[in-house]
View (cartoon, rainbow, N blue to C red):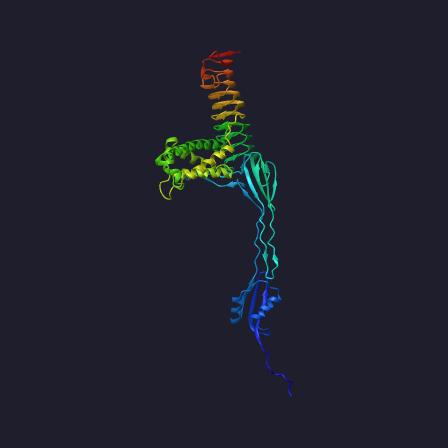
Length: 512
């Protein structure tokens, strides 16, 4: 006799289970037969046993109960943590060497392909931003899920830089070569006052423009340009090249077919140009204000979004028709040197004005009174913080010069073989050994030369602008003219040990 219950079929249910992750609970329904009831109540009971505290997706559960297996259904989802942001640095200046060609009038300038990251004292280099922490998330059981940790940017400061009182902005304390080295989790930042060029400056190096001092061990070769805000020292010769320094120029060799200028740097020239543009735009601003006071011009101040291009064009035509060309030249020069962000913003704004002045069609002009005022204010603030300086305490020293021009806001000294068919123009004094034949020698207040002119009678001019200045010549040949304060003496015969000055309003020579 069979035992009671044997042979009786057990009740079977669909095969299902819960897949629980920190942020998601999924209901997995598979092919097969399970022994656990598959009902809404049973699923919720299991969720409660697992400690799931989030409200479940009721619609998803209902779909799962009535859908044919297999299937996967999302019943609950937590809140993921929001990632924070590590500390970072915003740069205001060029930080790496750039190798790119500059286009001028549609043609590539193959000499201006190298830009050096350089800064001036007081320039903002970078701003440091602290890390921003993330937001905590919540798991399906209600447990907090922390966001990934964030870290501050690691900044190490070397020479030539400082951090402001709040520890946020990095400033340059000297002119020079900006060095930014990437290190683990941050940067090492320093400014070296001198850029050292080992060997010659030639096609392999490209032109060099730098906002500190430059030291060149070799020659500056034909067609090259070297410009610096500081001093330039050249161990060799300068041959058919251009050298321009905000400080002094010291050349151990000679200058041949070259142009040397000390006392005005590329950046200073930009400042002088910007100063002139500012003065013109201030006059335009006065004119705009005057027109706005008339019945016909009241709209200028009342309609802020209305273009004032016709008014600006009219005033510029009267004040300085060349301002557009000056802005274009300014924009071309900015490509050749490394400039801080605020300088670039002002020049970009001026370029937009220049583009509108030459506007002939296309998009409508957008020089509004508000934008014009904002640009002018920005320009005035920039020049107030970075005034143009006319340096006097500079000099040019070289061994000799041939078919060259030397300009100095300060002194000029020629140490060995003199100058031939050249021009020397000094704001201070000129002193020189050797012979000076042909050309012009001009000084602010004093000239002392070993020998001027030649037996062949090469015409040579020596001039001192200061009426109280003096000219001393150890030997002078015919065809030499000396001017002091506009009064002159022309030599018709060879003389020695001559001192020339003005006494009682007349030119006076002392011999011996």
